[in-house]
Length: 461
Image (cartoon, rainbow, N blue to C red; front, side):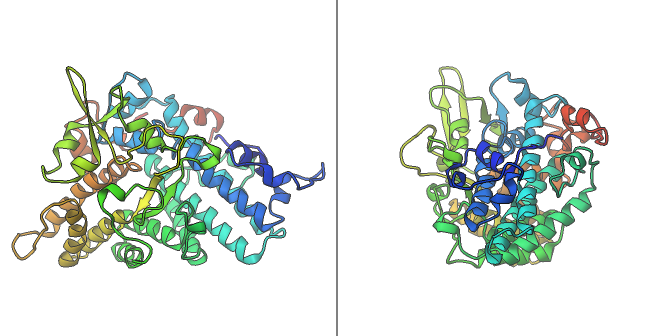
């Protein structure tokens, strides 16, 4: 397993966080730098900020072609590859080889983030000069990011090693923990985060987790686990925070610090001079057809009057062909004042989570009200239970379809939805000629199997 042996200061520097804050700290030669990082509130806060910065760079979370946003959309039925790049085609065809470098990038970059969070949790536990209140909050942020990262690992790979410390020798030999055990840890971390984080965003920027961010992820986790009442409870807590969050017109959703945003990542994280998002750079077609395009299947699923067709989908035409591309972000390449942040979590998902959780509890009227919030914004006719015969199964189907159209090319939602609903095979087998039921999990990377003899491979690889 790929873990860095670097000291915490080195990790922060490699993640492009300015090291100037640490220049004045004199460190005896016989002491590791991690001890001095947690000698003050300022340097401890910089360590946590370094993790957020690394999320912009990390393969799995960057939003670029190596990210979950791109690769899982290819694995589902929302994106198709326009190029013959083997790494992309393997995800699209659900024929991922164990030496696929993009797959290795997901795994190794996610575990690098987990290593960084563990280093912060351990360092703060020693409480070396960090005030208790700040230490508690920073620990909660680190545990939130750890839970967030494990959510994707366990959903993409199934059973994975549960790494909660920084001892390289121990970590490099860990076997896979059960999905149940991973989820227990995720919930434990998020419960701590939801209790210890504040209600407000730092500096008015929606770039670091607050209490509602943790609650929003808990709502998603409980929906995945089929805990409908808890999913409704936590999503309601976020939705009801109306002074902080609201559904916005489509053209405003992905702007920096949008009121729909629950959590975003800045393109300038880590000192980048580019002010466009990685998603904008990768998806927008200007001058060429790009590496990926939206599938006709997705585009044709929208009703003609759905305003998302105009606001969130672009068209690139050549003399012979037409390509549709994700156009949620409008800036492809920029260095001027920043206007967009990469969206990680947003309010619309919480309405869809609550709608599904309520439907599963047979609260159909309330569920339809939530679903109509999303439909109304997109200029779609509202569902009226008094005029239309809508039973529980029909409503669940409508919600799944709405999730696809609302959340496409955002963090692999479609791929994860098909898997958790048990519909991946039924939906994709007719669209993917090489589909096999074992394709619902990605392979454990070959490099990781070589390094760790206690790791086992997923079925089908």
